[in-house]
Length: 456
Image (tube, rainbow, N blue to C red; front, side):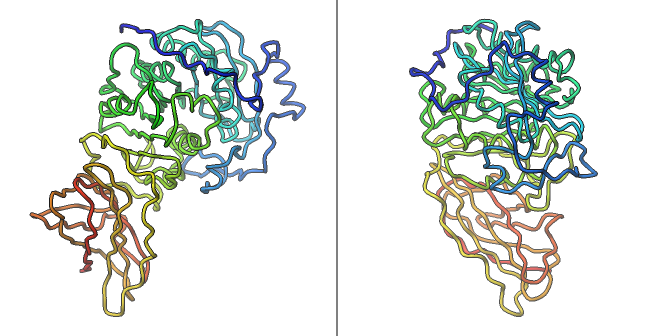
């Protein structure tokens, strides 16, 4: 694939003085091992829940909460060591949990952007991710001017080294590996996913172009794209072009971070990590406890655009995610995401649904979650009356120019302007006074319909 010179990813000013300094290369693997034995760890955190779910041997840590996902450190103590040059890449740093009682861990290899050093730009991510239960290998490239193809090759070489000959190879599950990179490194990440379909996931951070527009239509690897709303180097329209090529049969998501520029990913970025940690948990650990944060997006603070193929079920994982986010019964939309981001103002608040009056089987309440030029996302809450509901049906009328392209947590049918959504198999039964919700993507301008609800 032809290469072009990409804009430099080196910040114009030195990193903030508060940034963690990289570990000197003189630190040896032996000293790192002694640090573990002596209990000298980089991160000291509170004790974690030790029991993994019986049906998922990779599940690690306590049940997640919005606060835990947004925390700057997870439940695991970590340490780090310097990786020597050789083995197909120019060395780097490895970060990993010190706990050996829970078996092996999933791993992610990270590569920086054009002209950049991992030690200067992404080292902040290492302890953060490792504390949530991952082995993280941040690599330096053989040449700072290496293009995307070379960065892809070095990412895969780094994973081979990590699982075959590295001193921490016994801590890594060779069947749960992923890649991530920024800018040219992000483009290399996507190329690595095309070359090695056994990867569990790939994450492109403002993924740059290797010369031609990246076409991911043949990828088999679940893919997350993160980009900046104000990125003039890898623009939102360019990232959207990549996103549009991802196949419908492969789970993928795209989040655009409000106000972020191209270099935002080279600095400590809590919004990025609040999205990245659940994604890695789902696809490296098959841990669907974390789907609640992405399907739908639980916290849109700092996110100007979000699209995903919910329910984000990992390949080979459970056929349904936890009850809080049951899978959709319709395929993801084939139309591209909107070209104009949704407004950054928070969605209107809607009071909790009230219990229907006696004698009413169920009620339905609508709200608009968000809107953009040419489309919107809506949500309907179905609430049972004073008796249990076994099956429900909602109906409403489309406004002028409206249509519905996707529904999750329900089964859609339309007749003219009449929309009918019936329960899915997993949410048909509601106890008295309890509720369930379904969501949908619509085209056109949002209105405020008044859906009806009936039950057999």
